[in-house]
Amino acid sequence: MSEPVIKCQSVYKIFGANAERMLKEANGNVDAKTFQENGCIVGVNNASFEVSKGEMLVVMGLSGSGKSTLLRCISRLTEATGGKIFIEGQDLLNLNNKELIDLRRNKMGMVFQSFALLPHKTVLENIAFPLQIKGIKTEDSINKAMDMVKLVGLDGRENYFPRELSGGQQQRVGIARSLAVEPDIWFLDEPFSALDPLIRKEMQDEFLRLQEKLQKTIMFITHDFDEALKLADRIAIMKDGIIEQLDTPANIVLKPATEYVRKFTEEVPREKVLLIQDVMDEKTSSDIGGLKVSKDEIIENVAEKILTQEKTVAVTDSKNNVVGSINPAKIINTVFGGRKNNN
Image: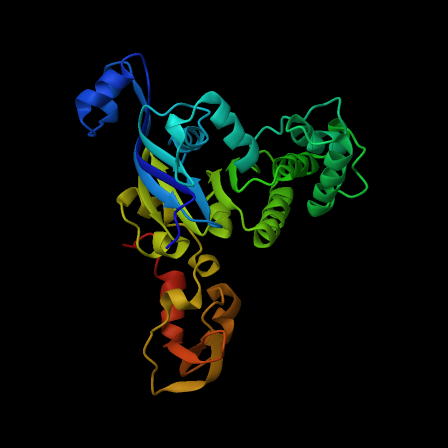
């Protein structure tokens, strides 16, 4: 198995004058309340995980859960108080300033909630700016920036200034600018939360299209569970600096690891999240009817068809081989039986 692109081992971020001494004395067992009584705030508490090449890990939690602090530690915009962070096998915390700047310029792209566009530069100039900082010739950087303009669907607006763009268009410029340097690793901190719902949905769709094409390794921060479910390969749910559960969207909904995760997910419309393969029976029944559905279908898309059947429905893989079955009653139970009382 290939080496993970991002690897965190027992990462802590504690704010306060006595942070390092208290972390040492706690011997890895950090109690947020005790630390708070001693003038320290626990931002990230013993975070360990890996992110594979091309994977999108969405980190979510309520305000103050530590998700943005974790991202800032991994990009070393904030110094971790303890633990180890590896980027493609390099020990991030041991890099000197020059090595860190090189890593950020050549490997990392970052997009934050505030667009931070330069108001006196056009769309094209804003996108070309990080390339020029890298020392790329003006002509080459402008050509590359123009490619990015097309990629994010802003053709015809390359000579506009930020004030002439909508919020969604400004966010596209921010995304294009961070993609221009061709980062392997992409950090996005609530990039769509300032947008109105319609533009937000449009940006999520655009983002998925880009990811399918570019296959970046991504950490994406959000407090919106629907957004996490739509975008994530895996989701990490944080509370008080602790990662409560890190799992696939289906497992987070079907098998919550803690009471907090269960409450977080109980209102989720399961039919929009789960695939047929998440709830199918792997044995094939003798009572199978004529209908077949793909294991990769979202339940919502095929529920109506299945519910009109009296017999069990065959489930197929991409080669049309039958790999399981699903009973209409299972669909009803999955859609309506999981709310509130779900364990």
